[in-house]
Length: 452
Ligand SMILES: *[C@@H]1O[C@H](CO)[C@@H](O)[C@H](O)[C@H]1NC(C)=O
Image (tube, rainbow, N blue to C red; front, side, top):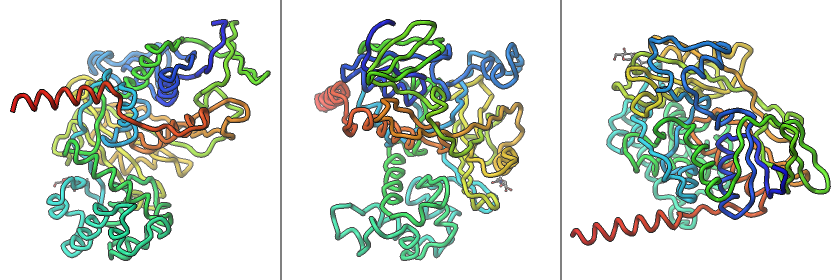
């Protein structure tokens, strides 16, 4: 360990592992350490025994009625992957996709007027959906067509509006959409956590709607995919990529000291010191270089049945927009996965409920979601602080990621990774498609061509 590295990475959360992978591929010499004996840090997936130990104390074992502990892989940070989103682009850019298998999530639902409804996935479904009244559907149809046709560099598609300036609420007004439709478009399609977007330039919402529609087109049932064996597979796969390019990985390494001098970073673990040009870390490694900017509650619930009123879906997302849950400012998310994605024993369902904390009694805030789940067999609740770095790290060469937020997908996770990459290298991360994948695609096409 007594040598010089380009970069030392602390913590094997998904963000840190992606950075490690990207830097290793570019030929940087990377040393990656974690104080835990497992990969993933805050974003790990745990076996059932590990889960009971974490929440119920050391030595606690899961009851045998749950089946084998090792059949479980329970995410501490629940998220789904938008199938046309940034994380997929990163998997294709690095070819890490070859280490993973994904399966589409069965359905996407939204709460409205105390009932849950499927988020429509096609024009036909939208027109038949009880989410909108009869007359509302005409306005909504016009609005969706406008969004679909909109192109930045084609003013003829702009309908005379400047979306880079006009706030989203005025665009909704122009199309005459009512409050329930706006709620469903803003929260279940554009996936905003709260209503702040209404005052911001409309272009971001339009782009999010396009991302949702594009993701939806890929697998039809829902816009989301999820890896077999849990999200913990993601950091491990990026770590594998880094290792192939010479990255050194060490788990169970308590970090005793980090000092910054001579323009270098010195990291001491178990009495040995390694030196690097810069360090990348999750916020738990530098408590004095981060600030707390909120709290997130997550409740992992084990169920014996699918969620009522979701057509027995084996995996599903339910969004409870803030306005549908009394006086809230932030949405509540429910993500359900099961043995169809190999994350628990057959017959069990894992529902993870999460939101941004707004009161002194966070668990009570989750009640509207608990009420949708049916009987809960076991529940593990955690409230965690959300941290972000105080500075951008370019001065002290200490680049720190933000904690994982309450969003139900990986877009903000990847945006943070791209931001850190830019702070380190001074250049934008341009996501392309890996030559291996292009080659495969070409071979497939040739094969299809020769069959015809
Ligand atoms: C579930 O379906 C039943 C029967 O159609 C209905 O009465 C109930 O309101 C529904 N509940 C939710 C939360 O959608």
